[in-house]
Image (cartoon, rainbow, N blue to C red; front, side, top):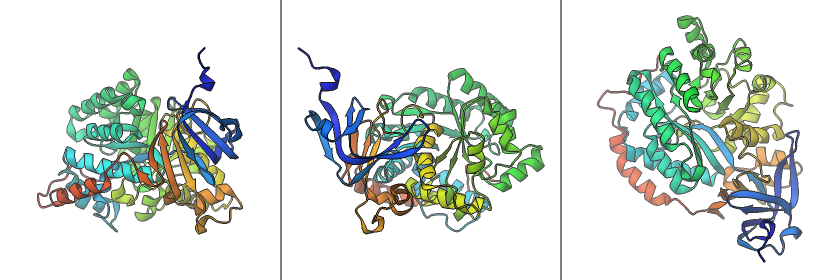
Length: 454
């Protein structure tokens, strides 16, 4: 007589935790003294500790006193750019690109990208990030790192029109070869850089390729107000209107930043026939002294999900999505002049379900519930900076830090246990990367991969 599926040994049972939940109205709640059963990389049940007391399991985690959250999603980053953390400081955007970053990026080798991606993945795993959307070069190397380290990722090979048709073709080739890779943990997108570096003809061709191959698009657009105003002067259309006019908004599209989204853009985004999402990375906007931020409330009102992001560590210095969650809440209060927006519960919703939707995985991750992939992080709130807990949502958003994450699980596999990384050798990565930095940072050649002129 065989066991029923419910009686079969679980792969992982987590007990004693408080689980962040979502109800059918998408409201945040918390289930105390709970247990999570994982089998086949999927959450089988969220139940009580008593209900799993005799349940056989390959692995058990005692999470008493900890909070279980869906793994955080970094909805827009350039992971390998951790190698440039601190290289271009205290500069306006144009000088940051033209004088430092784009000259340095002309030196990039695939090995540099691989090492940067390893270091970035280690940082994100330690910060409770289980999935990231990456938009960069030499992405075969990034995909290999993702497969090895166990994270989930949404990857796109970036390109400019200055590369000719070859750049677009390479982006398509990458997306088709790696779609569904790493046992389904990798999804892919076409990744034109931005409307100011990719011309209309290339954007039209990209939209056609996306429709023909069932691929989404990940693109920078309306990054700041200057870009929007320059686009209006040069083309008579905003960057968002260019996306509409070229057919990009007829595809599923993830727009990075959007701090230059104007009021006239909102009906354009609302009426898009594709699934549109925006990624916000407020730390970088503050650092560049941009006068506006992503209009999260206005986008919410027209039904556009906004996911949380860090951008690359060259501009943001950090891949800390936990910090992005707190900063998004605080910056939105300041931008709207309303302390009631956004609340801690709203911030948690952006960090979980909305971020999952932004990268096209809203039916797969973003909540801890039966049938969802088992991407789970455990946070320890016993530290003095998180006690006492009067409002758990507020404690998580405004008091807890990424270093309070004790355990990170992706697809049911433990990638970090009790702060110990299990899939990446950080000292080895740091050692080799340090040896390569002099060649990477050399700007004496006078080259740059692109010109920032918006």
